[in-house]
Length: 202
Image 1: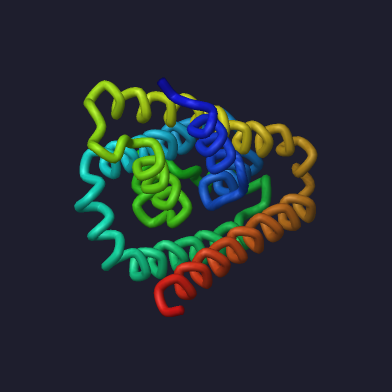
Image 2 (image 1 turned 90 degrees about the vertical axis):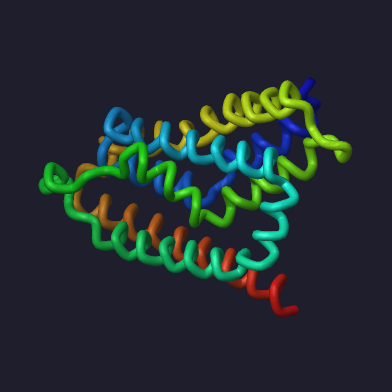
């Protein structure tokens, strides 16, 4: 029911660097895999919910996205820059008891301002829903397939962060890692914002 193009698109979009994956890797380093799991499940659930909305309300979502896409991108990228700043100023390993990883609900709600997640959900709905309208069973197949492909892809980043944790126990190494991840997230935000600005005003 789900073809190779669907598997390829969802896998590539899910596993390539983006706000979710950078946050998961950073959380894995700073808090470990076990404490990152609620955020991981929240992100996956939030992405699935986006797909439910876009496949069931495609016409309305597309009209809404046309009007609000750029303002949403600005809000989302500003939030990413704020998260980058928080990550850059993350505490040393000795004081990690006071810090908390993102929880399930926060991970799910973050998708509302994640431009890459919206792009992925809207594209899946457009590309893999029949033009004549999808049946309920087809929509459920798409959502289930998306979730089954997306979850292990984003989990790779949390596991990667967890595996790096022991190597980054030294304060300066953790600070350097957090700085690099914060910089990558800030660059991601700037790139996404520039791309949206160019599409909106070019």
